[in-house]
Image 1 (spheres, rainbow, N blue to C red):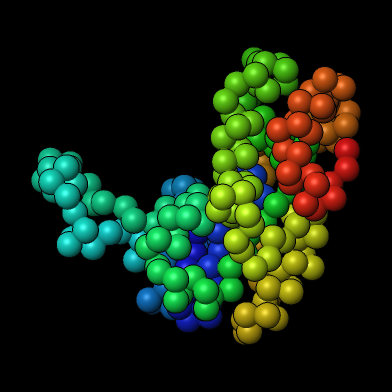
Image 2: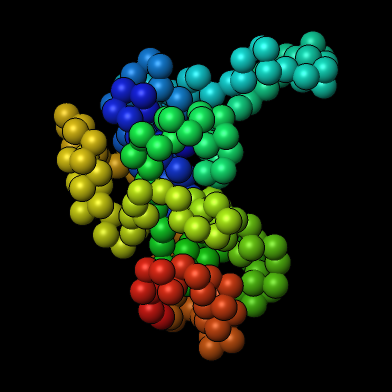
Length: 230
């Protein structure tokens, strides 16, 4: 998640939508006052190798500490986090206030739900033995995915960002964002988390009818809003 005071934008990071790559690319343009949340150590190394800004300004100020936070700090040297990677719109708005929230351009990415679920499946289970897709769909994982998607960029089931970009049009969407924000260079995406999936079949060749229907029912709001088809 990034809040850029320099370019007046808020990037909300949904899950399994190339969010980490986009976040790294946006970091190139951030100033020292901007808020950048941490990503995985491997991805932070990629960001550092590119010479981009890393995590900054995401910790809570000391005046926001409660007794439990002070105990954690004393015992574990663990600072309190205010901003984090998959932070929902509701919390971001609460912390930055209505003025910044209303004035800044807010955007995120969404993805075909069937494709997104399969991407998560192979991310969770990188090697055999894996549970079946049906077993995976019976777990909490698909619900958690929705929480880091539609529920992240909506408040009271209403979309509150200025644009929901589509993963399927990634290159065109990034160019639109670059021009709109006035970024001085191309948004080049590094490759992150792309080598774990060996099965490159289309989701239609993986899912059966019952699995397709179950995903469609869970993500019916997204399918309706963005015209996704199986």
